[in-house]
Amino acid sequence: MLLRAAAMQTIRRRACDGLRVNDLLREIPLSRRILESRFVKYLGRTPHEEIERVRMDCVKRLLRETDLPLNAIARQTAFSSEYYLSVAFKRAIGQPPSEYRAGATAGLSSNARGQHGG
Image (cartoon, rainbow, N blue to C red; front, side):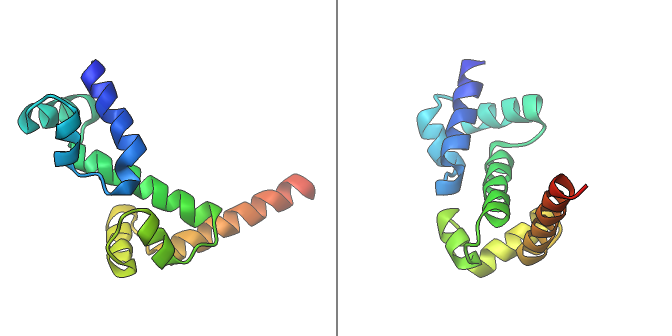
């Protein structure tokens, strides 16, 4: 249980810095096979899938909360290029980052109007 918690903390802390499963294994004294089987048992996904999920959450947050261009977001989240970030984002989220940002921005604008207008 403590090892799983330590693994999750490491993922949350370092996923956007380019964390890989091998990096995780250097910190968690388990074999890759055991680590993966425990992740699948408790989370329903592999360590790699969890790293990518947390990384995409970081990308989504930056798209929602900042005006950073996509190439800057790619650098901050350890993607090798804006293109690769776009491909990975669309595969994981189902829409390009630009559409996600536009929808998130529209949602924030309508929420703000609803709170102030009535």
